[in-house]
Image (cartoon, rainbow, N blue to C red; front, side, top):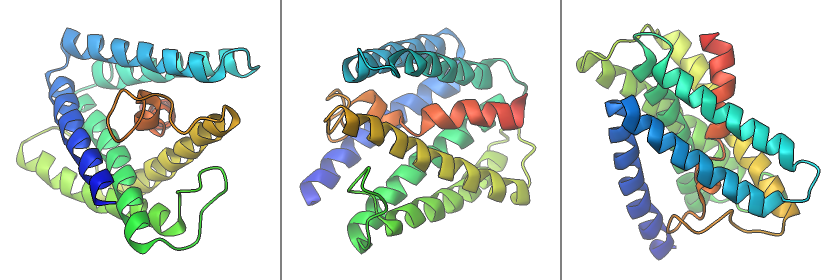
Amino acid sequence: MKGEITKRSISSIILITFSFYIIIVGSYLFNLFIIIIALISLFEWHKMTFKNFYYFPGVIFILISFYSVYLIRNEFNEYSLFNFLLILSICILTDIGGFLFGKVFKGPKLTKISPNKTYSGALGGLVLSLIGSIVFLNISNYFYIKNDMTYNNLLIFSLTVSIISQLGDLIISFFKRLSNLKDTGNIIPGHGGILDRIDGMIFVFPISYFLNFV
């Protein structure tokens, strides 16, 4: 367990630091970054589901998802950086909370679709994402990152995003199960493929865009 947590932690720190830097810088560097991630995601989806009837709907959905990523960061308004980082932070903290709480508290399994998921992990993801989003809002205010988020709106938004993220995780796990795969790839040590890492996000971003930015 310690070895797994160490490997995941190191990979996460490097990936999160690099990703946040590119997101904050934005511009062509960010656009190139999401194009590369999108292509890798499509390749992993292709390997996992090719010749299945849901292959093309999945391709279309992934393209729509990454287009919403582009829109939220580049084309919305002066709050775009805050909104993007908030969504990303909630997804990351949901995943971390689910992993840590699930490993520590264990308990009943959440679903047969993903045997490693537990009720304690699901609750831990919600709790950590909520606490983290409050901290993020205060940090953003301290660094004068423009936002129009109230604490009431933050509570609703954080819980909604965290739940969608966890459902997205289960949906990708369902497709992996259909394909008899443990991971969608092996590009990230301790995590698997890109789709393993962003499974919740690819559902969160388009839904967040529709609910909040249209």
